[in-house]
Image 1: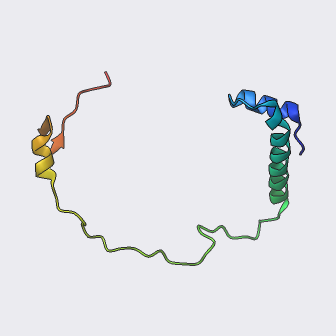
Image 2 (image 1 turned 120 degrees about the vertical axis):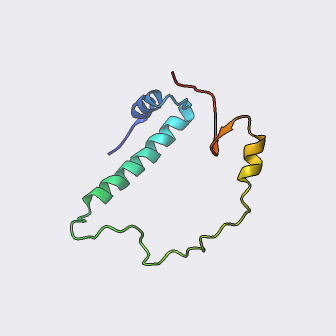
Image 3 (image 1 turned 90 degrees about the vertical axis):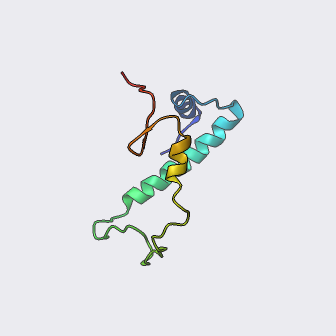
Length: 95
């Protein structure tokens, strides 16, 4: 698929983007290349390909689930404007 200057103008107007006249021809070429690549990828038969969550067969390293800082909840609750039963109270914003 090949885009021209008028296509770029339409896309820019719909996206509310300011594109200068000098950039329109360059964007037309770049967007056409992107669309051609998408057409090539759509043409590939992927029916026999198993979907992957990640292309590399690796296990993710996990750190131990241990607290890294002391619990300061009581300190923060004391300086809060309003709390109740361990929760912070805030003004109602939705009626």
